[in-house]
Image 1 (cartoon, rainbow, N blue to C red):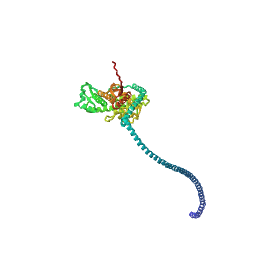
Image 2: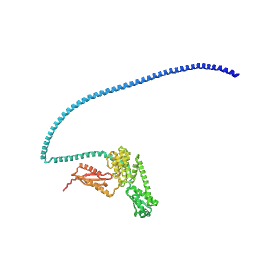
Image 3: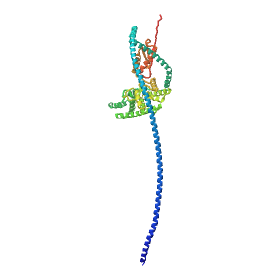
Image 4: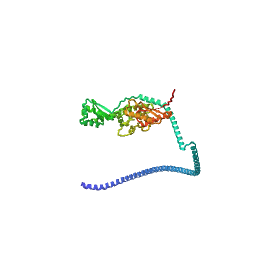
Length: 520
């Protein structure tokens, strides 16, 4: 029953619900579409406005950019026009100048042709006059030869000889005057500086020998040093390069060598071997090698201490080592390191007195004989070897020149070089500073006298004061006072060029005029 009632109700409600749905949908759908259309229209209008604004802004930017480019283009065009205008003016001026120069060149060419013609005419005239002059000269020479009794060559030779002799006399007189004038002022100042330098420097000297003596406890040790069939002494001499003399001298063994460094190695090695008691070839080589290393280290320390003592710095390590080697070198019996230190002090003192750099002067004085420490297999004068060594290790150019020129192997370039040379002579000339074998000493004096006697007009020569002075007696009829002064300088110059000697040599030329009368 209920189902029957429900079905008609459903049938009635369904169309009603469908109609209501359509009604509401139609009413609200139109409203939504209209709202959407209005919103879309609003968006379109806003977009058009924004697009118009953007278009207007871009047009303004483009116009501004175009205006700037136009101004730049106009400016550039104006500049180029101005430049072309200037170039055109310059070109026009050059053309005008070229035309003027061309006209000037044409005018000069005309003048040159005219001058060439004048010169040619003058040359012809000169040739004619030259021929005429030569003819007259020949005639005059012929007349002069007949009058004088001399040929033209003889007369020319006589005239030249007279002029040369007169020039020599005049030159000698002038040189003597200048020399005497310079002596008056320079001698006092030089003596003052040198005396001050010598007084302020005191140095001890010890005579270096070629042998060292090693004391032993008893003579039985000599047999152990010699070894079986002499094997120990041969091994020792081979390792050290020193001659070992085992003789009858009680409790002593003598080591002989000209190389002080090797001799010192041998002395220390032998003393250690004797103290240790083990003496055989292997032990000898071991001890000698160890002592050699220790002495090489001692050499470096000695060089560093010397530099510190003199107040020097920034010196290459190899040069420091060479300075240390000087301790084991000698020259004419004078210890090379003591000599170099003294030269450094003397040079520094004299440089201070003269207003020069004392540190640079001491550096040059210390290194002046460094070439003597170079390996003996390298040949050459020690000054030039030292020059190459100091130059190699980038010493100051003044120091390098002073080292190379202190024996005048190269030209002196600075006053410090002359001071080093003077200090070297002072140090070597001290009494007892150097020794010389008797034979070479006598030979040097003989050569000195013969060299002075080789000059014309010299009668006798006498070497005195251990070769520090040479007195030259001249013939008074051949040598006058002016020539005597020149002769003294020439002899001194030849001694410097041809002889080796320590210190300096004074040359005294004596000219005597003796008149004898007899009373009867």
